[in-house]
Image (spheres, rainbow, N blue to C red):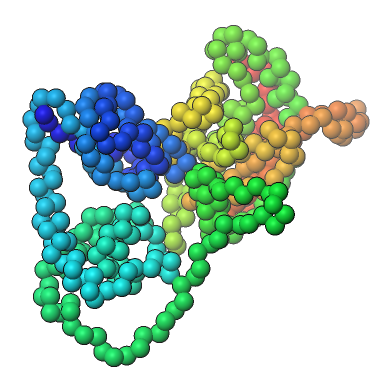
Length: 434
């Protein structure tokens, strides 16, 4: 018998960790090669981790809601035959476990159980359990330097802390503290579940994705000084041209030609004309992005939002843009997006017109500095200028709503950018080949 370490696989260049959301197998279950063992989540994308081998699941090293780094061992699978060399990493943790056991009794005698409700920092359930078992107070835990994302304290950080703490003289740990009453700060009460007053209301907890969206949206409003510019666009030529070519396009390419790739093409061109809209903000520094990667906000069937990204959008022709839009949109609806599909966006477009909205004031997708909302296309009466004079006619029009970060984008740039998008759309060639 041999032991195989199931590790968290690499899921994209910019993805360094994931949260375990569900174990599909329990200890003792038989697993086939390529069979899913657990479900994980990175930002807004959920995916499964399959086993590379067949065998029996003998050990689960992380629990639901634990944050795991790429490359970390998350489970042990016992297989038939092979070399038992995979057991070696266990030996590396033996000194740490021994150090924990050696200090646990002393720690329990001198420290009260940790109350994490008064801490502003995030700690995973595993880290909290270790701290409680070892009698580490929340104040002491807050002093540990974390190596995880955004300085988060990981399992390795707290075990190393306990190991080093165990090497110190016990007398120093057990020394009596001065008889000075420390000020007591009341911990904030845990948020109570709402109670229906009339008994007929339904109380529903937010799912994981909705909690993330809520967090990101509030953080964006608190981070960026949002300001908006609006412009009305005559897209009559685009509507006529699409009606003329869409059937032939679908027959030739096997893809539907929607308005979205047409708008995306115009946005990519405008970003090339105004590179200071294709930036991000990091503290007091501006990062000018080399690539134009367009985020495409999409509503999921469950009502949540996701933003897949079209990489190097300025390098795609209209056919390529249509295929990219359809591919990402279809995979988003089917829940088949990969973590890297939502990473690296430099500017975002959202189509609020899909739901009949004329225009909207979208919230910036951090750390980007702008987002464009596409309103519904409507037939409206309009003044048409001709050499023979002006007259009233029916035109197809829509609103573009541009939200931008006033910390780094002033009205001149924000307004000029959305005007350039409108210019590209209104100058559409009715005879364009595709």
